[in-house]
Amino acid sequence: MTIKLKGRIDSSNAAETEKKISEEINGFTGEVVLDASELDYISSAGLRIILRLKKANSSTSIINCNTEVYEIFDMTGFTELMDVSKAYRKLSVEGCEVIGEGSNGIVYRTDPDTIVKVYKSPDSLDEIHNERELARKAFVMGIPTAIPYDVVQVGDLYGSVFELLSAKSFAQLIAEGEDVEALAKDSIDILKTIHSTELKPGELPSKREEAIKWAEFCKPYLPEDIGEKLIKMFNDIPETNNMLHGDYHIKNIMRQNGENLLIDMDTLSLGHPVFELSQMYLAYAGFSEINHDDTKKFLGIERETALDFLNYSLKYYFEGKDDEFINSALTKARIIGYVRLLRRTIRRDSDNTALLDNCKNRIIELVPQVSELYF
Image 1 (cartoon, rainbow, N blue to C red):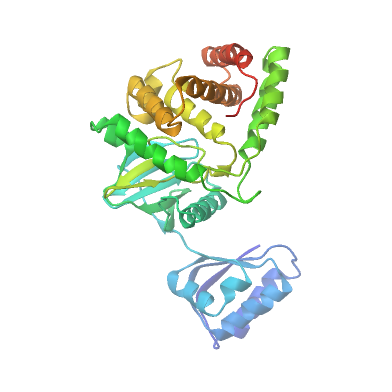
Image 2 (image 1 turned 90 degrees about the vertical axis):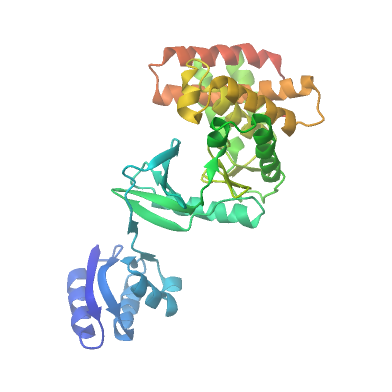
């Protein structure tokens, strides 16, 4: 049940307000939401009404508080007693530059100082707050991360706002002619920091558990012997506690005043680094293997440049390892990547027979070449 609070609630009208609320509730025992979007002020007399309501209906919450009203609830400790949320600032992205797009959202530059990631689902508030907490967690652990400082409403959707003064993505820097190898090395410096961060078991979602589900989903679409070996190899990948970004590519790495920062932290997880490399392979090579123009659409650079970036990334990630080791690690990452892409295509683009056949053929080709999927 949603009850709107309006104007001022103070000692002059507290009794009447409580009577009206009681009449509306009238024995209702479910969740009560107090909509404070039109509430200008609330005194201690009004707070006592809400405290009694909270005791009677433990799931009572307050939404859409303006800044002044929220501060009253915060100062008096109500934000610790119950869920109290601010009203979301409304923002338009009409005519703004699109600087990136993923499966979850679109990133716009709204002015030289600010970017906003608008989530595609109207029910994304939990996801937005989760990403915010993950970004904070990564920042505290020493990962160079851009932390969203505000949540805004964009039409019927919601977005996270980041202050990134004149920042450019690595994709933009490459398009402007910066050295590909140097940028790849910089990206791997950050990635090694991420992967060297040890987490507690369960502190983030397990990428291994998710990946095993990919393999189980794809097994019926593959020859029996390949499918069975695939399941075994996925299950044999050790469950490590390395932090993983989960969507690591040149559009999610920003440079601001000489400092490199990560965005799009909602995919943070833990697991073996081979899962990260499999996603990187898809971003730079796998997704565009059938239609090479897709690299330009997704990353804003030519496929050949993307492949160069991938190769330089592998060189610096496995610095000191010989070509045989690097090629073996890449083969394992490719298998995981093709399994993920096969599942994704079956679920979202099942008419794309060329991509489906390519994924299946690559898995059938590569699986016999390895005995495990980790390095």
